[in-house]
Image (cartoon, rainbow, N blue to C red):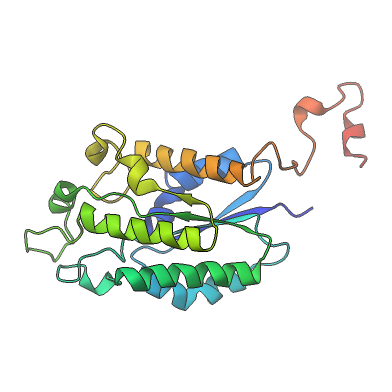
Length: 237
């Protein structure tokens, strides 16, 4: 019996998600008897680069198709075009179109797979000044929260255009008091608390789409369901 899979496709916030306390690791633990959570995170990538490699990323998957794929890009696209991260910058309209292309590519390959978009997170500009790129001596943040917000809007627009569920992380995180330091460790990447927010939001959106522990079968009998008088009977089917 092949387990269902849930694929996480994104940038460094996805790549780091299998670290200690990461949202991907929490997701893998959450679905530990029901599905395999696979990380396809690529630090520094924007949607332009993701679109270039998407066929290679998804080309090696065997049947059946994944139960769900999360698409989590935008933090790098939203680098300011005149600051140290300019080489990662993607104009916001191109970003929106790239998201549409990525979603359509995945949907054409796996029509039954649930797709879930995640907006870029908010930016704590003070944190970016305290943790700049190694070669950046400009004294200016390479990202701003207001600019990231325009990419949030484009991500929401793409989700609505293709009727794909979305986690509005940019808005959600800013509802927490002290989000700048409590949820972001360097103005961009997530703390343990920030990872918890992403995990809970992803679990809820997936549940709404029918991808949940309760809705998925376990691959082998649970210990709690075994007949204590004849345990081997549990494996007869």
